[in-house]
Image 1 (cartoon, rainbow, N blue to C red):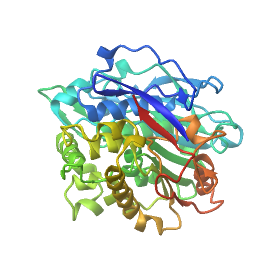
Image 2 (image 1 turned 135 degrees about the vertical axis):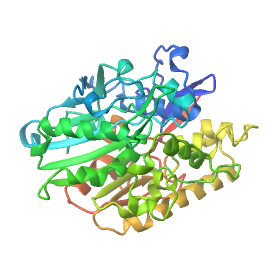
Image 3 (image 1 turned 90 degrees about the horizontal axis):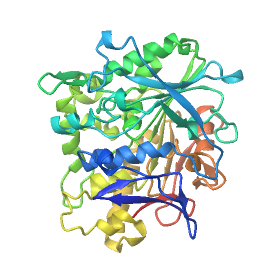
Image 4 (image 1 turned 180 degrees about the vertical axis):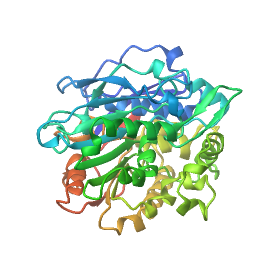
Length: 430
C-alpha cells in the first residue's frame, strides 16, 4: 500500500504531492510561505491544497508538460469574471493525429466560499482572481500528452478550465458592497463559447471532466455540455472526487449541508440548478450530487474514494463537530482509527454505495469506487496510470475510464470494504 504524506501546519493541511512515500522512501518538501497559504476557512483550505497538488507528478517520472494560461478576453463584456472582476482563464494543449478533433475539458476544483468573509479572502488567491493564477501548470494524469501515461486521451485537445468563482461554476449574482462577482455560470458559458470558436465545435468526441468541486461542476453542467454538440458527437462526463454526500457528521449535525446552504444562497446558485430537483427539494439539497445523478441524461462516470479524504476531514469530522479532538489521529492517518471510528466510516461508505445504486443500473453510466483514503485520482499520474496505480479487479482507473468511454466494456467497479485493498495511494497527514 502506498501513502502520500501531507504536512500540517497551524492546523491546516499542506499537501506536497509528488513525493510518494512508502516504507523507507523519503522526499523533501517544497519551501512554502505560511502567510501566503493560510486559508480563511479550513474547508476551503484543505480542499484547495489537495486539488492544487493533485496534478503534481512523482519525482521518478519524466518532467511533465507545462501549459500556459490563456485569458478569455471577451468574457468581461458578458459579465463572466472572477470574484474580484478579473478575466477567467484556461490552459489548452492542442490535440494531434487521431485526436485532433477530440476534446477533453477538465474543470478545476478548489472548494467553495459560503460567506462574504470567505469570498473576500478568496478573491486574494488564485481561486478568486486570475491575477494570482499560475502562468504555467503541469498536465499530468488524464491531461498528460504521453501515451505511456495517458493511453486513451494523450493526443486529444486537453483543456484545464480555471476555477475562480467559488460555487462550482454555478452562481450568478453580485454583492456590490463587498465588490464580489459571483459569476460561475457566466464563466462556464463564456469558456464554452471560446473553446467552440477554437475548434471544439468540430469535435467528434468530447469528455467533460473535473476534480472535487470541479467534479461536482461536471455533474451540474454535464447535460449542458452535451447540448453544445450535434447528436453525432460522442459526449460523456467524468466526475472525480465530486460525490459529496449530505452526510451526518460525528456530532450528529450536517456540516456540509450548512456550508452548501451558504454557497447556494450567497451566490445565486438556485436559478441554475436543474428543476428536476428543485421542483421537489430545497435548492441546497440540489447542490448534492446524490440528488442530481439520477436525472443526468448524458453518460456519466463517477470516480470516488469510498473514504474520501476531504469529506472525512471537513464534512464528517471537522473541528466544529469534534471540539475535543477525538478524531484528530484518525483524520491524520487511517491506521490510527479506532474500531468504532472505522465502523462510522463504513457507514459513510454504505451511504455512498446507496447513493449510486439507482445510477449504476443504467448501462450508459460507469463507476469506480475504491476503498481508499484519497481525493482526486484522475489528475495525479501515480493514481491515474502507473505501474503501481490503484486497482479494482486488476483494472486501473485510466483503463476503466477508457473502457467505459469507448464502450469497450461496461464498468461498474466497486471495491470491497477497507482494509481489503492493498493498491491504494492513501493520504496520510503529518
